[in-house]
Image (tube, rainbow, N blue to C red; front, side, top):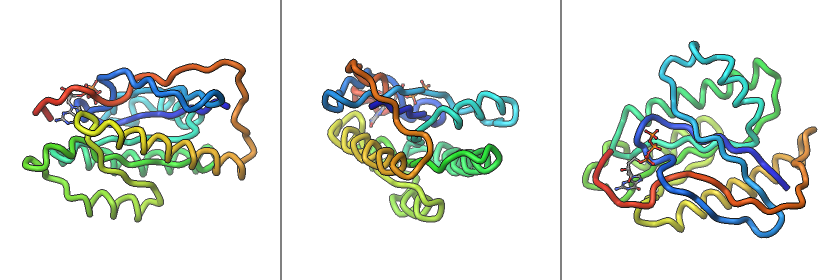
Length: 180
Ligand SMILES: Nc1nc2c(ncn2[C@@H]2O[C@H](COP(=O)(O)OP(=O)(O)OP(=O)(O)O)[C@@H](O)[C@H]2O)c(=O)[nH]1
């Protein structure tokens, strides 16, 4: 089976530095579109619509040390939902991720705020440290895969079958730094 995931967030929140090379067994392939966030979504409307049509699921990343990145994720959720309505596209899972949990001494976004945003917008929520606890990143991707499978069971567009196993690509950072 194959599924498409769009990963979005503002600069340096920890989306893509490392190569994420986990395999979901023999049967599952994830295609990941690691995408920088454009503050002015209207300038990139057609590209944004392409992403919405392509995606089977989203990972929206902010840094818990960067309130502006959290506000951007909040705007992104609204933009995805209204574009989906406009295109009459199927509902797909959206995961909101607060990254850099290890930098708790610099935290400016409370866990509760992330959780509440997810609750209000019918999304899923994780707080992780891609640098310190890679397992938490795996957990969120495994969770997303399960939710995409569930969503596909009730949608018109089934996940495609593939004979080959590919590894996932590039999300999140491996190295610990104090940057944010
Ligand atoms: N302390 C800490 N640093 C992290 C964490 N995740 C990423 N970083 C660091 O944050 C910086 C930015 O990480 P990237 O993965 O390049 O961020 P990005 O969102 O892909 O950034 P752009 O490519 O500019 O959009 C790097 O120096 C990472 O090492 C984390 O969980 N904790």
